[in-house]
Image (cartoon, rainbow, N blue to C red; front, side, top):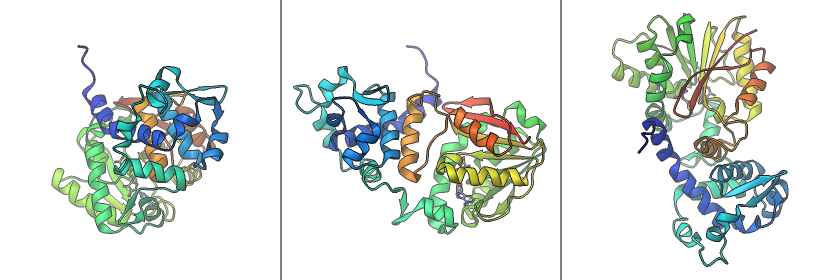
Length: 335
Ligand SMILES: C[S@@+](CC[C@H](N)C(=O)[O-])C[C@H]1O[C@@H](n2cnc3c(N)ncnc32)[C@H](O)[C@@H]1O
């Protein structure tokens, strides 16, 4: 058997439950039945009273599995799969999916589709709201930051070895969360003076995390809200898994804030899982995109989307300098 990249395998396992939930929601809400004949997504969303953003993300995710197809902007079920996904077929498999519809992720995707509101809540409060206002309680901050440490420890270790960091004397990791990137950079690029910028409650957790995992480190911390506070000046910045948390108008706010604190030549590193330009591959990223749409009303980017956002704010086109699993590290320069 051909060996697969173990990190890609792990990322695929991580997204597997989102794939299952997306299919079970499509079956429960009758989406496959509604696309027996080609229909545009606009028509489908008004017919089924569903959020266009979530329906678009779901459709592209299902397309990445080849269950559905797009031709001339019309959307329809793949003929080969219809025998398994349509309820009047003798080979219908939907009942097995339907028996698991009470699972959390299924309910969250379904609610986001029908109610069109971000659904990642902690104790009933939307995480996006807490982030936007900066009012995040210490339990939520600790729980989410722990999750980001787990998710980013490996890719940050691999990506931080990239040679582009050698030209960087200082770096601020904006929304740096657990400090996973800061620790990896401290180990692999010890010449860089590194600071983590994040909300105060998150930094409390980050400081303990960093002190436990890398005693004697020189990492600095700046508490602030990147929508409200000034962003400290630096010769380089990192945004890792930040832009995918926000709709495009908010991404624009963040990047224009960075541009204001930057001089010509300042480097902006962006770490995201990028979609291919066809928006229906890689499958992992299409489902990650669905998850972000459901969690925050946001999206994953294709390189052309990043390009547009950066050019608009006075940065050069992004160049991909390193990859790890489905993550791509890009760099651009303030013009
Ligand atoms: C998805 S996590 C990414 C964490 C880290 N960059 C990584 O890749 O592991 C988003 C981070 O953005 C931070 N964040 C969200 N809203 C913020 C705001 N308004 N100002 C500063 N940081 C914010 C969160 O606290 C969280 O640490």
